[in-house]
Length: 219
Image (cartoon, rainbow, N blue to C red; front, side, top):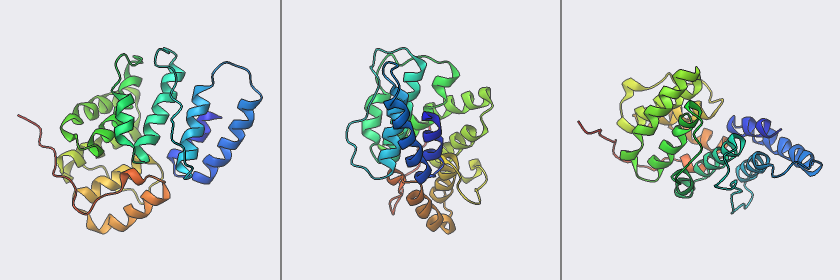
């Protein structure tokens, strides 16, 4: 149930995410299985996306080594970034001793990179993009590879690195590819991107009139 909520939310299907979240609450209300952190995270994500005034994210205990709890934390971090609370997300993303899930730990580096970029710390972001791209290749996750490539293109303001422009954004990866095209100079896609940001309830991804200068890697 939790993953159905998250998948609907990250695909921009906000009404479905809200319905799934309501179903999830009924399931959680009838269950007695400890602390359902992933369910809480999914409900938080759907609520924040729907415009609810949710202030305190339900992060799992920092001491937990349960990979499901780690997934719950990632869901919350991603939602905070989309909601324009990148600095708050980074406070959690940068905590020490995060669970090590191998390549699965590196794949969400795209959200850390995006949070850093949105927080004005682009010079710290590319290492996380590189790690996420390598993990996506290892796990054969093409959407994540496309997302990482889009972030790299945006970081460098290099249109030659851009993945193909999606006809219609159907997920978060498509949304960030569209964003990268706009940042790299595709003025014709600006209105489509603005509409997509609204449709995906992602105010944190709104572009200002004058994008920040590109990150120039040393060496």
